[in-house]
Amino acid sequence: MKNVFIINGGQKFGHSGGAFNKTVTSWTQDFLTENGFEVRVTDIDSEFIPIDEVENFKWADIIIYNTPIWWFQVPNRLKKYIDEVFSAGHNNGIYKNDGRSRKNPAINYGTGGLMHGKKYMVNTTWNAPDTAFTLHGEFFNETSVDDGVLFGFHRMNAFTGMEKMQGFHFHDLEKNATLERVENYRNEYLEHLSTIFKTEKQLI
Image (cartoon, rainbow, N blue to C red; front, side):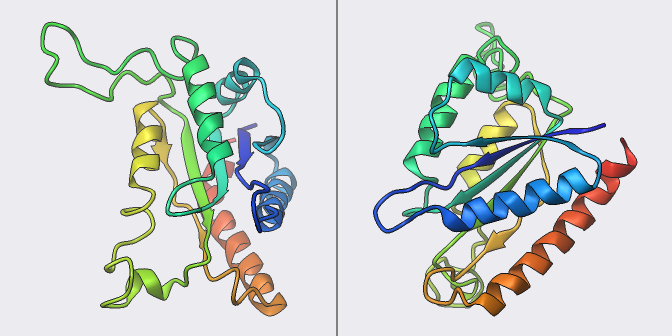
């Protein structure tokens, strides 16, 4: 049995109610439970105790982050969660140090993680359409979500020793979130999970 820890990064703030990320988290949890995985879920908009959240990371084989992107970063509550939980995980399952030695401090930065053998996935939700990332002359200069806005987030997880799994990105969810598009996204996302987790299920 593989253990999956889902972090719902949706946050109520301003005009955002976090509803779609809650929906994505429900889709994810239902899919994994139906396919034989043990699942735990944390909602970062609720109160949390950092040391208890560290235990979820230590328990899990796979961590899934579901998060909106606000101003090209994760929401402030998710950043607070990461800052506090990862700090509580120092020498306690998440990381030991930055990997360098005083003898030669110029090399091996980022190799002191304690979560080797674990994997993670990042799923994001956007107001921006997918064409903003792919078309010449559009805003993101033909740079993908993972290579651009999420670059630091991926390196953060690599710092802990985790291996990246391919995530899923939901686009144009403010101006074009029709029922038909949401249903199509649901089907595409579940197919994505089926493909990604097929190998993981075989390893149970």
